[in-house]
Length: 293
Figure 1: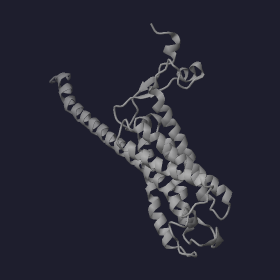
Figure 2: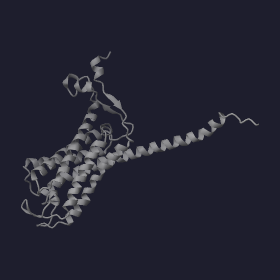
Figure 3: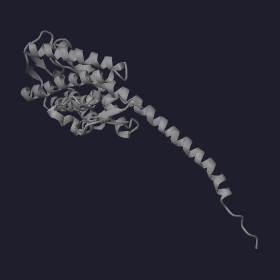
């Protein structure tokens, strides 16, 4: 016999729509982050500052500096700052779009067709004032984790947008605030999502690896009070894994959703052809002969 409290705390299971258009858009949006590496190389080639741009010594934001002149101990001058800052903003839009379009249900099962997503009920969440009451199962944890991932990606995306809109030499405090949002929330989202995904794809371990590398570098910089040797190398150790990790997430989702949409279209086409083949037979059997005058 099940008590009323236990019944109320029971989670709800559903099969996510992994062939939806919004999921495809969200996956492709995350995948577009990979464009950053091309833009960085182009902006770097146009550098006119002193000394020459060095990926180990110069931080990424130097390529987006709005003015030419002394800054942070050397002369910054990036003629293609608009391109670099545009990339930051485009990354922001892609991350925000991905966070909004990829549903919690699909993320919780890595867009794996046929996998059940378990959504915790409000009663289960509020039971005994605990997120994990004793009479509720742990099956709803991936759903909660996926929801947290969406929020973290949204925060990181907003932070990256601030970095692009407010270059380092215009308002350093606000610029660093945006960068902090990106470098803290970004790797955390990869760590959490990777742990959820290892059940559904071996690529979950790669997502975790990207999160570990980025978060470790971020923790090192924070522990050093933002003063580290070769800041450019350290910052890229923080940033590159975020871009690669989220792009990998987008690729996996986009591939699985595209494959499922193709199967759905094929099934619909086959069903339509079968219906057309049956229709003439049904029509001839149910039609009375035309009487002669």
